[in-house]
Image (cartoon, one colour):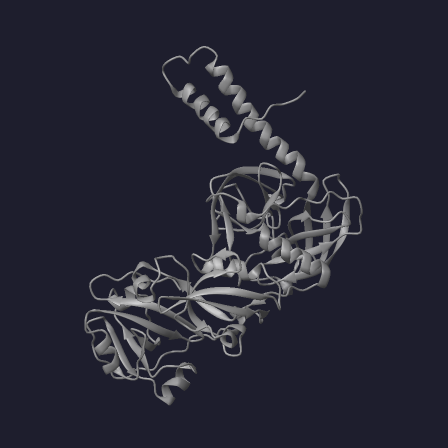
Length: 474
C-alpha cells in the first residue's frame, strides 16, 4: 500500500492540531479529528521508516578491557562496569557501518583500550572485530569485521542541517540493543566543553545514554548527521554528536592510513564581541579575531598577525572562530587557501599553504604554577600589575612576550569581569606595547582599554571597562 507523505511543516501543524483538539473543551469540526490522527500516524510512520532504514547499518559493540587500562572518565559501559573476571571488565557501545566490506565507525572511548572487540549485527550475527585506528582529537575510531555484503549508512552534510529539525538516535543504551529515540537538533557548533581537542558538536534532545556512544544521529531520510559521543548528566535531554562532515573525513583517513592528518594554519582566535568590534573595524561577530600566530607556522610565513580579523576562507564567509576552524578542517594538508582578513579596517587577502596539525594541544599545555607573592598596588579596575622580571618568568614558567603581569585581580572587579586572572601578562593596551604600569595607565585614562593578554601558551584580546564590562570568551 502506498503512503503519501505530507510536507514536514504541514505534518507538524496537523500533529499540533491533534493535541489541541484533544485538550479543547469544544468539539472538533467534523472530520478534523480523523485528519489530525491520520497526520499523527504519518509522523509515527516517518520515524518507523527511519528506524527500518538505518538499523541494518548500526551495530552493537561489546568489549573486554584490562582493569589496568580503564580510563578515569568516559567509561564505555552500557550499564556500569560489570564484576571483574580475572582482571577483565566488560563494557560496550554502538557503531555505524560505513563500507559494505566491514568498516565500522565508533568512538575511541568505546574501543580504544579494548583487548577484545565483538560486534553484533542487526541480522543476529556476532563476529570479532579488530581496531584499525583511533583519532584522539575527535574521540572517533574505526574497527573492522571480516564480512561482505553489509549495508553501509548514507552520510548527509551536517553543515546543511537545520536547528529544530527532527533527528533520530539509534544505539544500545544500557545494553539494550537497537533502541530508537527521537528529538530535534537543538544546536550546532557546540564547543568549549573540555572533552576533546576538537569540539564542534551537534546538540540534540533525542534521548542518549551510556551505550549510545558511537551510534548514529540521523535525519528523517535516514542519513547520518553525526556520531553520538557524550551526554551532560543522565536524563537531562542534552546529548552531543560529532558532525558527519568531520566524522566522515576521519573515517576515510583511518580506514586508508590508520591515522588522521589535519590541515593547520597555526593561529589562535576568538570571537569579535561588540566591545571589540569598533577597535578592529568590523561588525560584532563579523569574523574570527586572531590572537596568536604560532612561530614557524603557515600563518606567520604568510604574514598573518595578531589583531587581524579573518572574514573568509576559500569560498566560505567567516562569522566567528568556529567557521574558521570548521573550514580549515575541510581542506587537506598542503592545500593553499585564500584567507580574507581585515587589518586596521582595510581588506586584504593572504595565500596560506596549510601544514599538518601538530600533536594534541591539550597534552602540550603546561599546568599553571603557583604565582609569586609580590608587593601589590590597588587599581580602579581591580587589578595589580608588577614587572615581569626574569625570576618571575621562571616561577611562572612563561617564555612569551610582555614586560608586566597581573599580580592580583579583585573579586567582582572590572578586571575579573573582563576574564582576567592573576598571572596574566599584559602585552598591549589599545594596540600599543606595554613596557610598564605607566603605559597601561595612559591607555586606560579614559576608563576603557583593549588589552592583548598572554596566558601561558595562549593569547587573547579583552576589553577592560570601568563602566560596563562584558566577559570575553576565550
